[in-house]
Image (cartoon, rainbow, N blue to C red):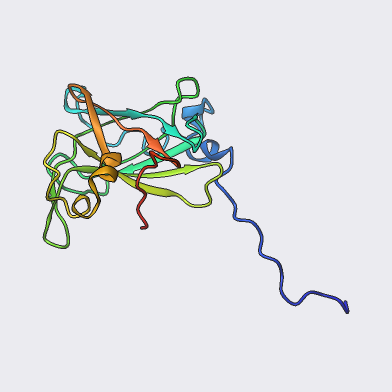
Length: 191
């Protein structure tokens, strides 16, 4: 091979693809009997419905279209501000028809971080979708909590800070929409 190229061209990044749910959430899309339960189906075991809050919303693309081919993973502390290995992780996706996701979980408590500072209650989100070549990470804070001294929120301007705060729509129920691009783009963290 006299004309063989010494350097190969870079291949395109592999995005999550349209089949993300098959491997990660088969029961949620009616492919049963692979796993008894999908991983992260219940973020906190042994909790009564009265102890749970609901966070619901949609994920919007840059054109303002609600998406359903999205997987959201969440991680959070419990109501006492404690992180444990066996609780706090959830995996969910928007409903195919309504394009809304729903997370039923405990309301996280404040916790003391490694920096010794008190962090306001939040839920961490990781978003994967077709067309994204990496996961996007953000947080959900709650409008009825004390937020003024949170280490992350204290460095974000007031306009953008609102994109991280879930609105209380009724008792124990919050609305949090995620905007991947555009004027309302959610703040994503480089972690």
